[in-house]
Image 1: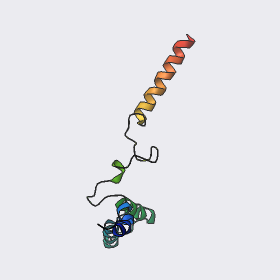
Image 2 (image 1 turned 120 degrees about the horizontal axis):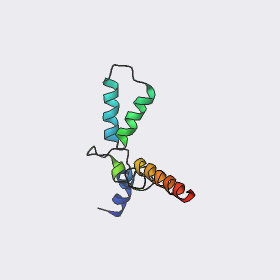
Image 3 (image 1 turned 180 degrees about the vertical axis):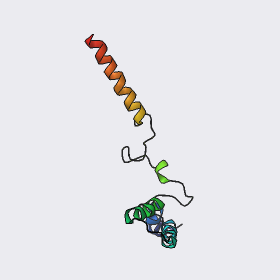
Image 4 (image 1 turned 45 degrees about the vertical axis):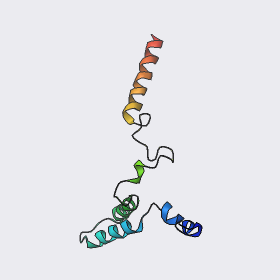
Length: 97
């Protein structure tokens, strides 16, 4: 691959919103006869754009952007937050007694 060719394909490689998948989602939406709320239709197209060619969600691959995509990590889980809060309350009550 040429240097120029590599630079010209740079946007295509970085583009997470793959046009082929987005067009397929728009076609599916146009085929649906029922009345979808506009917000739901927009959300469907956005979700289709966030997926790779294989259909797998790109959120699993991308780990940046603070906790937006890594919600399943141990620190971020709601259950662990609640448990930590309960433990803190218990330790405070024990210190008061």
